[in-house]
Structures are given as C-alpha cells and as structure tokens.
View 1 (cartoon, rainbow, N blue to C red):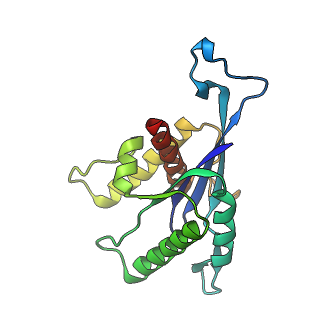
View 2 (view 1 turned 180 degrees about the vertical axis):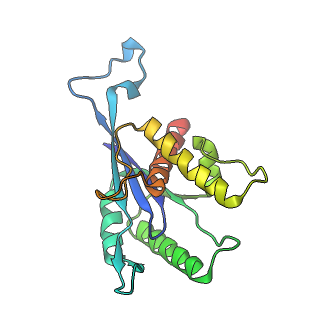
Length: 196
C-alpha cells in the first residue's frame, strides 16, 4: 500500500494522508490497455495538528509528544510527504510569527527523525499546480485570502467527494486547513506520478 502525505502547519493545521488500495475482486490486466489507477481506490485520512489548552482563554500550544506520535504513524510507509514551507508575512504579529515558526520547526524535526521522504514546498508553487492560486490583481489581500480558502475547499471536495473536511464533529462548515492539507497530499501524489 502506497501513501502520500500533505501537511498544512499551524495550530489550526492538518495532516492529510492518501492511501491507494486495490479495489475488491479486481486485478489489473495489462492487455486491456486500462491505466493501472483505474484498479485502485483512494482512502483519505485527515488528522488535526495536536494541541493542548494553556488554561488561559482559548490559547493553545503544540502537543509535542502527540505530534511526534502522529507523525510517526502517518508517515511510516509514505512515498512522499509535502510540507508547506512557512515564513514571516508582512503585517503578521510577532507572537504569530513565533508560533508558526515553532510549529514548523517541530514538524521538520519530527519528519527528519521519522526518516520520512519530505519536500518543503512554497504555498504559491503547490497552489498553482493544483489550481487554487488566487492571482494578485490589486484587490484587498484579506479578500484574496478568503477567496483562496473557499477555492481550496471546493477543489478538495471535487477531487475527493465524500471526505469530511470539518475540523471536528461539532463543526458545521468545512475547514480550509483540512482542505489545504488534502490538496498538499494530492500534490505529492501527482508529483510522484509525473516522475514515473
């Protein structure tokens, strides 16, 4: 069984895993001329980045042990892991930069320790590849970000219908972070397929 993993880092981030399994009672017949993927069925799993409540309002911290255990389990047979590269953004606060960088560092170390085949990819690169990059047309940056999140949810639901993209059972709407993690895993799958 081959799997592909996508990671959207952050306190609200997700780890997505796509596994390919043989469909029941079907064996590929090379003479039929059908592409081998027609005999495979994708299985998608989504995992929120583990966090702990600090006891001060809604503030959370990364659950280091929980993150390590999750990464070990999810990437153990992965062919490729795509990790979205993080960096400081103009207008972002100091504590948000620190939190994002800290979580990104934890993920990098967990993936290195797990010996996972990992690529770090810039957001614009993978978003352009899967068709969810919103062009900078001079409009409001917040509006473009909101449009990009909605586009990611729509694309993920189109590629993998039936996958529950909600952040939790109590959520009413799909999580854009879960959608982006799934699209990163899809990006990993398409990158390995193109190189074959």
